[in-house]
Amino acid sequence: MQGLFVEQDAGVHLVIRALVVLLGFWTAWRAGKAVAEGWSNYPLAVVYTLLLAGAMQFLHYALFEGPILDGFFYGLDFVTLLVFSTAGFRYRRTTQMTSNYYWLYEKSSPFSWKEKH
Image (cartoon, rainbow, N blue to C red):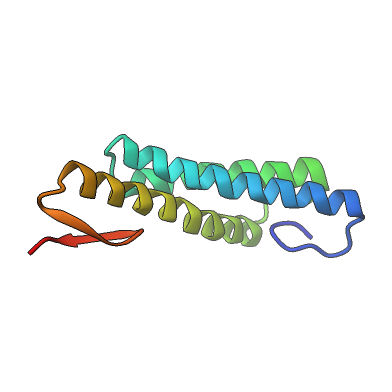
């Protein structure tokens, strides 16, 4: 089985699989953050996440002999990575808006801002 779920792996494969998953999550976070840093729109982060999900599919295939063209696992990887890329995008955009326009906005959470009164 491939994707984020593990069936029966030896200890070393389990560690490698965990490292690959963490690498994917970190890369998705950084991709979302990079899009926000360039003041680009969110759909670009989605496109980068689509490409990253393809790269993760290849890593699952190359390292763990999973199927390379499986829509279910590609979708699962994409949705999971999209959560991290969206979080990175929103976190950075919130910081940008509240620091560059401090007279207009204040943080309401790490991922959102609101107008000052």
